[in-house]
Length: 486
Ligand code: ADP
Image (cartoon, rainbow, N blue to C red; front, side):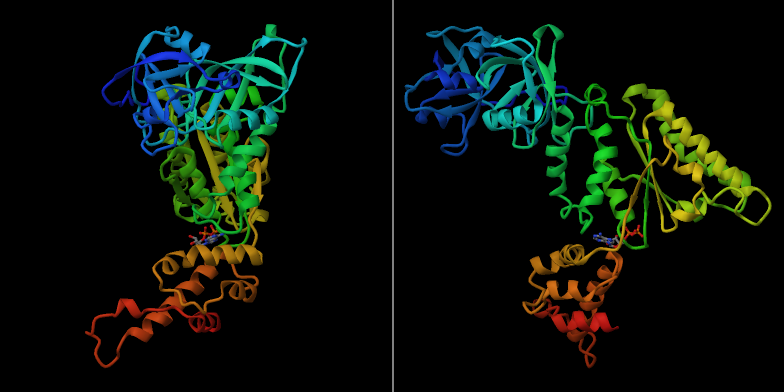
């Protein structure tokens, strides 16, 4: 059966192999199939790395070689044999399974059960179990509905894969199968009759996936804001990234609105945009307060209403399946100044603030909108906008410290460094020290200005038509120092 993502099986011509038992008792606790090292070449593209095999009609397993398995045999444990409906000695068809590009599992939901219970009311620590399962099942394929046995703290358990989500898939989309990686996030389910109690499920979330995502901040081009990003991620992301039934189990409430505030040029827009992109894979809608604020009262209110129109239409058409709409509101203070604080006496602002508040409150029923407001002047904002249920998560984005500045300088000099345009004498640590109180945008400005100094050296004033000698362009420490003193 093809996965819902639309990828079916991709495999080579089938072969047949003789089913045999797994070589040793402990190997029964993995989901690997085993074959001889000569046969591994049928499944693996590179010598000793695990391969993937389609065994029988529908089972995909990771395959490793084992010295005790003879050529032409495939070793399957009892659970695998039952799943594939074969016995030892049977002949089974096997072929190489070529995994789709993104085969790594982001979330794997497992139904836990005892096989051999030691005692009743066994308590399982989700953090520890997650570590164990990652270690034990790394690189192994998990398929929906599959049952796998394993041992944990001296007790034998069996789990059934009840949900699988691949990395990069939209939230709540499940897949047929995928491979466990060091980052796979496990959600544990148990039936009340199993007597198993799961503790620390929430902690697995904060201790694992968020840290992993942190590492990618530099890739996202965001320097020095890892604590802030994690904070935002933790509070707003989780309710989106995980499927609804997981979030409800974890007791995470959906966050509708956030406010990023702090000095200009510190990366608020940058971060909001990346969060928007990470959440639904496309550029978020960015609007700017002063732009929305048109001269005509009625029109501004209409502008505010229009902002939410797409989300409303989507919700009407697709219900729970509606896409998430991230709306980024830059300079939100232009619109949401405290009511009664403006002196024009027309009440224009008041009515706009009211309109926006009504819309945000309406998001409760919409549930497909995340509004990210940004401002350099939090003090100007109408209090009502900051109450729970509105822009309830507020994160301050301050000027970067020295290590933040270094990260930002690294980000903005990465390209030239990769292309050997950055002279060896450029000392970014030194520059980070020298740029106290510079914002990210100002640091980017310094880099650009240093580049222009370097380019100017290449331009021959005598002959402006002379082509630029790209090879010899070097941005030097002096260029940076000149840029700083500009
Ligand atoms: P804000 O919204 O806080 O006023 P922006 O996000 O618009 O600031 O920043 C403007 C530009 O400055 C960004 O596009 C980016 O190139 C650079 N910049 C600002 N802060 C950072 C940062 N923390 N890391 C990397 N680049 C940054």
